Structures are given as C-alpha cells and as structure tokens.
Image 1: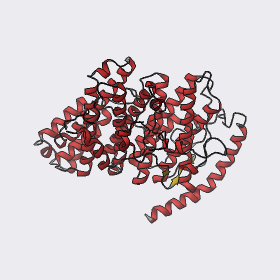
Image 2: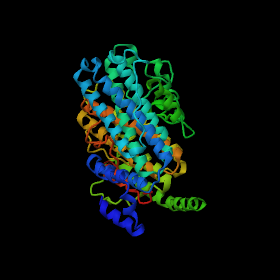
Image 3: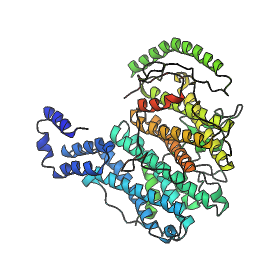
Image 4: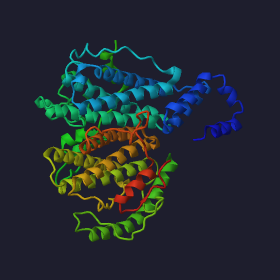
Length: 282
Length: 233
C-alpha cells in the first residue's frame, strides 16, 4: 500500500486534505505509530480510522462495537495477566504454561490493536476483580481453566453477536471476524486442557466445541456458575432449518441432537455479554 | 431488488442447460471413479483453468457466497467421511471420537447449506483425495489442518461480502466451530499449536483469504471446475 499515492489521489478530489490532516497531530502521529506497530494487513483499518478522525467523522455504531470489544479484551488480558503471575500458572505443566502464555499474548495484542484503532475514542480499562465471583480462581488450576473457558466462549459469542452491526464493512468486520476465530481457537484449547485434567467425570466429557450438557442442558461446562455464558447454546434450528431433520453421515440416519448443537455456535447480544462481564468489573 | 431477482432467475435458467451437461460429465466421473470408495480419481491430463471463470457457476450475491461455503463444506464433509470409513493405522479411541464428531459437524454444515440454498444449490462436487494417504496419521491430520485453516480463512475473508445480516450470522456460527476444529487438529499434530504466527499476524488477527485464493488452494482436491467470477468482490 502506497500511502503517499493515496493521499495525492485524495488531494485531487479534496485539495484541503493536507490542511485537514495537519492540524490533527494525533491523527498524523497514528500513521507512523501504526506503521511501526501494525502488521501490513491491518493498514487499511488504520487508514480508514485516521481519515475518519481527520474529517471529524466517527461512526458511533462502529466505535461502540469496537469499544465493547476492547472492554472484553481488557477483561481477558487482565485475567490471564493476573492468572499467569499466580501459583496456578507456576505449578501448571510446562505445556499448559506455554498455551497460557500464548493466549495472554494474543489477548494483550487485541487490546493494543483496538486501542490503536480507536485512538482517543478508546474507553479506559475498567478495574477487574475475579476472586469475588470465583474465590479460588488464582489458587486452583481447575477453577482457573473453568473461568478461562467461560471467558473465551463468551468472547466468541460476543464477537459473533456484533457482526451484523458491521455488515459490509470490509475493514472493521474483517478485523472483528479475524479476532473472533482466534478466540474460538483459544476456547478450543482451553477446553482440551480441561479435558486433559480429567479429575472428575465432568471434565472427561469436555469437548473442544460447545456440546450439550451431561443432562441435555445448554451449559456443557459442568460449572453451573457459567450458565449465562452458555444460555441458548442448545439451539438446533438454524435459518429456519431444524438440523436434526437433515441426513446424517451414515445412510439412513439423521443428524443427532448433540451434533446439531455442536456444529453451530450461537451469538450473544451486547446486553447479555455485559451482564456476564459485570460480575468481574469493580 | 426486483431487477436483481430477475437477473438471478435468468442466470438460473441459463444454468439449467449447463448443469445437465455438467451432470453428464459428473455421472461419467462417478462411474470412472466408482471403485475408489465413492471418490473419483482425477482424470490425468484434465486441464483446469486458474482464474475460476469457467465451470460450475457459484452464482452471484449472497447466493454465490453461500454456494462458495457449500462447496467448501462439501469438501470437508467428503474428507472426514473417508477418514471415518478408513481410519488411519493406530488411531486412538480419543482421536477416532474427535474425527467422527468433526465428520458429523461437516456433514451437518453441508446438508444445512444444501437445504437452505434449495434450487439455487450447486450440485455435488467431485473430489480428488489421491494426494492424501488415508492409512497414515500424519497425512490425514496434515490434510485436516489444511482444510480447517483454509475454511476459517475463507469464512473470515468472505464475511464482508455478505449482504444479509442473517446469512452473516450463520457464517459466524459456523466459522467459530471450524476454528475450534482447526485448533484441535493442530493440537493433535503438535500440542500447543492451536494458534501461531503462521495463521495470525502481530495483532493476533487471523489471516483471511479471498475466494480466489481459497479456491486456488482447494482445487488440488476438487475435480469439478468452479466458476467464481460472479461472486461479489
């Protein structure tokens, strides 16, 4: 991408572009800081935001979604930062430490990315407390992983729920989807870590995907405190199609209820996500 | 909107003649490949174009994107169906359980798109898995990783092309499941590789691919020529 050429092109349409940009020192500064910090694939995003700022235009909807995402990423990053400094991390197996370090790094990168994009419009980081709701979260490894699973699966549902608000927005929607799938990868791995624990009957049946609970309930985590995170995940009807009426892999069979639940993840509204997150926000 | 609908109708009726011709060829290929457990072997010397402007038309607008997703789900479902039919040597019960579940998910995705697209659905694709050694764990999991990572990048890259909020949500509901599969398969190959610098950038954003990029990678496994030239861009 040739920034200078783009600016010159715009100058032919809007001769005052340079004047518009120059007084906005923050916007210009963002070009350079983006250039050094942001991967090339994200430059269109940076450019779009910078122009919006230069022209004094902001899209409230888009910024609201981005700030909602930032709040969630603050939450996740804070959780792993605290957890990875605690005894649950220092006493965890080496492979688990590696995974938790990677996930913490990704969540912090998401925070930095969203903050860069939002610039001065970024919300401040709230103060979080995890031990109010889960007193042993940073002393008991199983609890740490259970809460981690709750946060990751909530994150997946939260991004999914906001996609329609970004409909057709090549830069922002694509970035949001590209975070969404990373959260799903995290969720998959945390779920595998819980399965590997196998200290109880419940953890044995944890799958990398959201399945039906042991008693057919929407919450498959085995942790009743996470009920809100999985509310509605037992849905079997997609786009008006009851998935269990479709032909299964083996001739003469239909898709099972379990597979129907597993093969589609469900979105959560912003309100539902904030209702889950508020227990951690002081 | 009416105009677009009319265009779609016209495209569809033009298509019908084309489909029936295509079907004759498909039947031939099915016949030719019938011995290989339902998998047609690629006809040697069968020339394919690289610009995806000829062959089976995915269609335009949201229908085109849904058919694009349907094509990818067909590929994945066919792959895991074969894995379940002919498990690799020394497969553990845990891995067998995982791969059977993934097969069921992909078959459900395929059947969902088929049902949702109705008359607009493309026919079944002829696949070519001759490059995969189904008796070998490394070969099978390597292919699974390629399919899953490709699928995620495809959905991520096509999301903005979707005009309907409902369809976008449906794509979102599927892509996160594909990402869960991808992470699992990568962990089965090497624990802890569920995410990494080969698929995420410095901001921890996952890579995306355009339909042409995806089809260029997938064509190794697909005999049927695919025309993506009417997809939105």
